Length: 185
Image (cartoon, rainbow, N blue to C red; front, top):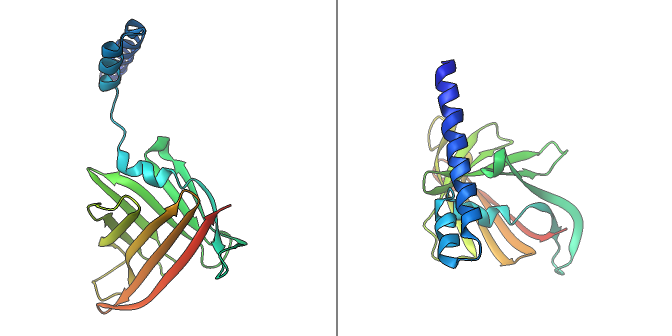
């Protein structure tokens, strides 16, 4: 076991050394810089749009002005591999949603006040200003008939304004939609 760990460490050091050497060798040569960039591990671009939400978001009233009430806080966690959203922090309705990559798919797990944890995957994106997540199972959901959040939508109005909707479903029918117009605090 110890020998395996040592081997893994040695390989990691060799890769890091090779990347450093490529960057140093690149100097001002554009083709060498491109090769060094290609050698770096790819960062999933689909999660980047969620990472841009980092910070506190407040509800916006009918007049378009922020009410000052923080509804949602986004923070990057797990070494940049996930984004945690806290909804209604400090209230009896506090919930957590974690956004992450599942292979090539942008996914989320919503830790709901209903006591279940629906997992959703983003639909294939055609509109860069809109993400629609659809339920792909979950825990503490015995069947599709159990009440659960079944769909979530985020629409970017601009960098500082979003619209978020969460559809709650029971027995295959929409029970309600929680809808929020949010502005960056």
